[in-house]
Length: 302
Length: 271
Image (cartoon, rainbow over all chains, first blue to last red; front, side):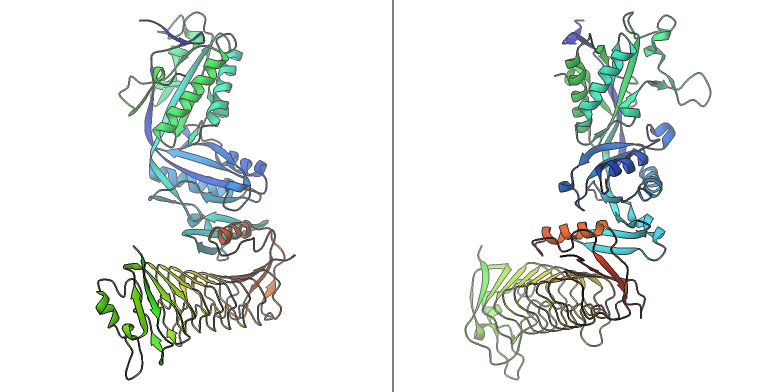
């Protein structure tokens, strides 16, 4: 088979395998973008993978004051989970502990949908009877008195059942610095894609996993086929010139958003070239039987 | 299709009940049937054909060309479609309206939008007393929708308001928001005495400091709240105001503390 490459970067003829998820989005505003982002970063902390965190969450995009309901800068946060109940539970606790508490914050729905998840409807009780309900323009808001004024929060937000989690790209490079360089470029490109988030630290995972493990109770364990230190001892996917692999995991509001994000990431890493970045780009899958969504790299190339 | 138009032929000699002239009220009726609908309230009541010349076929969008202070209950009970009146109307225009839009290009009598539950009323002129208020014996006034008075409103505007938004552009008489249960009243211009008297909850939003306030309203400083920016944007997007009402940090009074005290008066603190 002829090897596929772009700008000297080898592209594996493989696909990323992704799963259907439930997702919601909220818009957090604050007096400054710094504080809106602070609330969002706090809220999306410890939300890298549903395996251990209950949800996957990150900032989708920043919004200038001209595009928010209250005329203050804000950012859109997306949260993904496997079930509606999980999503509601995570949303409620994270909102209550991280957004309600953040100076000057306000919170609005950022996703339409007939199925609704509670935002202010569950936090209003913090007002201890002094909360104010406001309905206007087909929207319902709660105003909860707090020490710096009021926490303004829309009553509900929408939920989508068309979300996709688990789109991914693997960057195989000669050393750590180059793998990181390629991944960072890809993260920067994917951040510009609306409706797609990368829930891992800075968007990047270094501990890619396979399903199961030798120890009882381990749902996932190290992806030995892509671990360079095991290249000689396991059935490795790595060639001799690869000494570091980094992965980007992408969750999207729709399948199209995931595809668009992977396309953007691929282009950025390919443009960087093999000398400064990745020698090879691959993707993770489970043979195609577990996930409903398959993203073939060859279809997403620039 | 052209909107169905009712052109007034001459000033009516009796008070009229025009609640039938809504898209729902005349749906399914032929032109001849519409002309024979009774609208007079005297012993020898007038019918539509006696007073109006009809034209147009679109029964979802009605226009009444010409008005009179004797036009009572215009658009009352309306649930959908649109009704535009070019002229003045009498009392209870848009009473118990639940949907659709009512535009009155003139002045209105008392009880404009009384007990309305949904839809939108816009009045270009002045309104009488008891805007959005209940009739005697009713427990609640307006329960939803948007009511805009571009001119001045009389006394007791928003009496027992329960939900929805009332906006008054050129000031109002005494006791605006009297016995308010909840909801929102916006007034730009001079506000009469005792705004919010006996209000339980809800918001009175003014573009200036109210002058004759009941002593049972307690000043709460000038909190920095996101709601003012949100509501300013809503008012502009809805076409109710063309510039922000509050700006940042409105002044606040809490009241009426002679009842539950959970209501508020927010006002622009510096012009």
